[in-house]
Structures are given as C-alpha cells and as structure tokens.
Length: 356
Length: 236
Figure 1 (cartoon, rainbow over the protein chains, first blue to last red):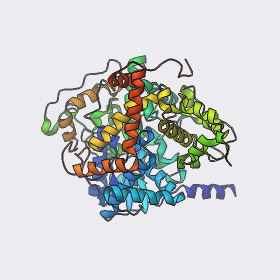
Figure 2: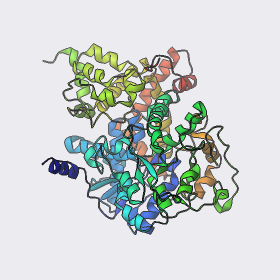
Figure 3: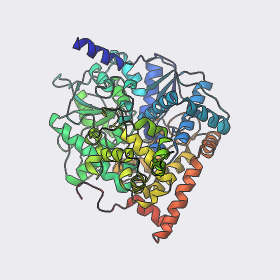
Figure 4: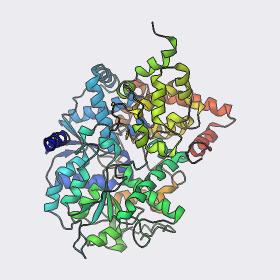
C-alpha cells in the first residue's frame, strides 16, 4: 500500500519530454561565462543526435534577473517573455527549451499565473500587440535544457569515449550534483523528480558511470540571491552560502560537481577561489579546488570533445584533476590559446588556489 | 466598509504574487528554518508573513521602509516546504514592489541599492538585450571573478571567437549583437508596461535622496553599491 502510494507520488514528478523540434532560448549568464556550453548543447542535440533545435538571433534576455532584482514590474517581465513565445510561434515551433534556470522558472511562473488569472494573460497580449504588433501561442511544452540532456543521457552513454570512472582504480568518480533553485523549488511538478528528489543531473551522472554524493546541504542554494550577489556590498551572503555547501560536502571527497543553473557553476567555482585566497582553505587535494562543470561540459568530456573547445579554460578552479582521473587526453600548452593558435598570454595565478 | 487601516493590505492583494503566496500562515517557522537569508541576515520570513497578515497599515509601512524586506535572495526555497502552501518569497516580492512604488525604498540602506541595480540591469537590457554583458562587467566591480576572468575580459574578442561565440557580431549565437529592431521592441515593451516609468521613478527618488545625503548621483551610486553598515548580520 505504502509502496503504491510512493509510486503514485513519484509518477507526479516524471516528465514526458517531447523528443524533437525545439525553440531554444539562451541564457544571459551562460553566454557571458559558459558560451561553449550553449554551443555544445546545440552541437550534441543537432549534430550528434540529429534533433531539430531553432536558435534565432532575434530573441533577447527574458528579463528574469532584472525581475528578481525588483527593478522591472511583473508585467514588463511577462511581456518580454510573451515576445519570446511570439518568436517561437512565428518560427513554427510549439516546444520551448530554456538554457537558463531563472528563465525556466520565470516562464513556468508566468504560464502558471496566466492559467490561474486569465485576465492577466489577456492584458499581456494587449501589451505585446501595442508594443510589438505580435501575437503568440503558449508553448505546448516547456523544458529546461538539462531536461533534454537527461532524456539524451543514454544516447550519450552509448557514444562515450570516456566515462566518469577513475582510470587507475576502475571505481566510479564521486560527483556532487547541484540543482538550480528555480528548476523545481517553485513548481516541483515541473522538474524531473520534483524539488526533494530531482534526478535530472543524478540520472546523467549515473548513466555516464559516476556515483552521486549525498551530503547534508545538497539542496541548499549556491547563494546567488540576485541582488545579494549583484551588489558588491551584499556578496557576503553569496560566499557564505557557497562556503556552507563546501564545508558540508568536504568529508565526502567529491571528484567534481555538476550543475544545471547558469549562476551556480560560476559561484561554486569562483567562491572556491575567494575562500582559498581569504582563508587559505582549499577543498580538493594538494591545493586544488573541486572542479565544477555544466552538464554540457561533462557530456562533452564523456563524448571526447577537447576540453579547451568546451571552454574549461575559463574556469578559475582547475579542471585538470578530474580530466586526469577520467583519463581525458588534452594538451596543457593549448589551454589559453586563441583562435588559430593565437598567443593570448596566460592569466595570472592565484596565490593560494592551485591552477595551471 | 473596509477599515482604513487595511488600505496597504488591499494594495498588496492587487499583486498576483501576493495572492499566490499569502494564504493562512500558521506561524510554524518552516520558511525561516529553510531560508538561506535567515541564516546570515537578521531576517525572519515567518515574522514578515505574520506582520502582513495582521493587516495593520502602520506595521506594513514600517516593513516597506525596513532593511528586512531586502534580505531575501528570491531562491524560493521556502515555497515547496510550507505546509500551508504559502510562499514568503512571493510575499517579499510584492512588498518590494509596493515599497518601490510608494518611494519607501530610499529609507533603507538595502532599499537604496535599487539605484545601482536598475542602472546596471536595465541599462544592459535596453542597450544590449542581455541582463549581463562583458562590456559593462568589470573586474574592479567583480574582483571575485578572478585572474582567469580578467584575462578573458582583456582578450574577450579572441576568447569568445575561440569558443565559437560571435561576440558583438550579427547572426545567431552567444553574445551576438542583437539586431536594433529587436532592441527597439524591448524599449517599446518597457514604455508600454511601465518599465521605463519604473526606471525613471527609481532614478528620480534616488537622486533626491543623494542630494539629501550630500552626495552627487555618482557618489551615491558608488556608495550604495559598495557600502555595508554594521547591523545587517546575525553575527554583528
């Protein structure tokens, strides 16, 4: 009886994700900090797995960061999103996939609010018509890009050049998964596995040979907090939350971290640098930190893509410890080269956190 | 007839987020227990919800002028855990909206941060079509981005090209130049939906406050972006 009840609850948190034909909405933060992740999302989807994904130059920010920093009214944010829906409609698509977790949460919140308050949807349609002369259909299906990677995880595993396995011991690598808060905390039934047991990232890790680390602060926020990071005076909040997570995961000696939010990999990467420089503490072995990855970066490594094509040189916390454990082939001297092997010099090294 | 003391509660009830987030709070404190902000700031979402549901104008005005409504990180960790389906985060968003609209935000240090936030975020959205953009992201403002990012910014045209991003170039791709006609539509949306008026409102009241504090707008911008007085943290 209890088992059946659990099965029913679990079934509420499964998503039937359409297989093909997606309109892609990019992420502001990821384009700045992880531009190659979005490139390889499209590469893997289109060229490796043969899916149809539309990437148009005409879409813009969804305004989600401005909205959650309280500097635009809700109706402004909703109308910007309505315009994205109009572009999707005009280009003949019905499924929208968001690269950004803030956007995914924003789109979900807007669709749910319109469902409950149809008069608001009508007003936004009027705003969009008056400002842009556009009309739209709502997406039949809304996904986050990590939902698609989750759906593709076994296809990727079949093509794996490397696995999340220690090449010397044959043991699975221990991976921390960090889910962006707005993926499923606001609307648990919209995320694979809900808010308490999201399996969108753990599913990828297990398919690719790794082992998930469970630790006390697994669901704690990375500490972005919008205004709590964007304003310099408030950043103690941000680093304190990341510190809490690292202190909690440290006893489990993770080999790497996988994330599905734009901000989380940046904060979990950069605050390790700050904690090291300020306190002398590092969380990896021999003065290194714990490498942090987007799900596209980890998928790319599994598929044998050159780490420097994936943009891993833009991480402040060195990724090489994980590459070496996996046995990934890479050329250290190529790390900071530009296009056509242009010499771009090298970044300065931090004084505490070990980097290459 | 409504009592006049419920005027601000009625204003809050016009906000869809408030209607969604505010049901009947039983004061259990689950939201505070799970809240990342409550752990570091002198912040207690349970008390905020309790105060609001008393519907007392004087208490709500005090909240609108307070530091406390600006401590939330809007992570919404409170939302799935509340046994009564409230969302303290949504209530805080509605309180911030009302604080901004009524001009109460300039009465608190954290509220005054709307000035640099609006300038930076709305500036990026309307000029580039992105909330964040490398042309306005500096290492001086973001030293935590580290030496790798300093190197990346110094060589950004080459590093973005290396990673397949058509930086400031036409056509699809990461950090492309968004066509002017699309940026014009964003501006038209701001004009139509109150975004432009909101920006001007924040600027007007902030610049008045700057004058009152004996600062130029530039000094006020720097001060509100960087200054943190004692008293915000649990450890203070």
